[in-house]
Image 1 (cartoon, rainbow, N blue to C red):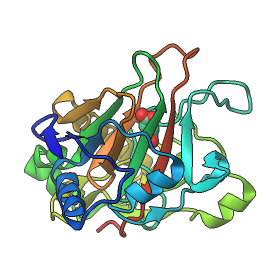
Image 2: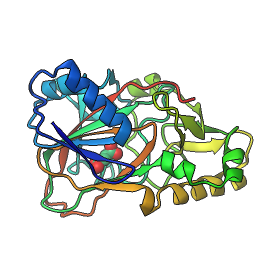
Image 3: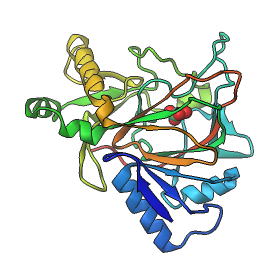
Length: 277
Ligand code: SIN
């Protein structure tokens, strides 16, 4: 197995590994160490069925049950799909994941990781961008770090401030999803101890103790700072990629910049995380 970093701070590609075969403890350890070190792993050249994807991701953790079951595969509901072929009820095309975000931060224990496996890709475009929130935190001025330290953000399924709208939850799904949860604006990675900015433009409704006039500009400034190109890794998908990323220290976003007559379809599974601290 070859592991090659993609940037100095984020992303590595993994070659010469067949995830359809059982992995040894050594492979598991090396992969998990690489995941912690690089935050995004692109494991190249895989052709996995949904059960094989579940087997492969069990190397990294336990499956997290996604909130909106609308996209679950009927024969393997722990796996969901991402597709550019779905539409909102009003007929507009739905591009999942457009706009910077971190997954399911409105959960008490948001998923530590998300995994996508490319099944069908457009001939060009459709990259996924990642921004490293630990590097962005390190680059903040000390006075901003002090200001953020005590602040808790209110995360909901769909922020009323978000330009990007999500598919609505069914009544059954709504019952499983908390109305609102509080998470720190700066979280400490449970495995490597690094601090990260923890923001999510589609989910944060406000900041405890600040009115919107103060909270919204602060959130916008943080997003603008944290998503600068210097903190980014941009993943250009190749057929057969299985990509796993660390939601505890990254934001990510999809790009709907390709020919929509072409299909972009990926399997998606998330892994259980901890309560952000
Ligand atoms: C996501 O936000 O999970 C989707 C990312 C992508 O489709 O590139």
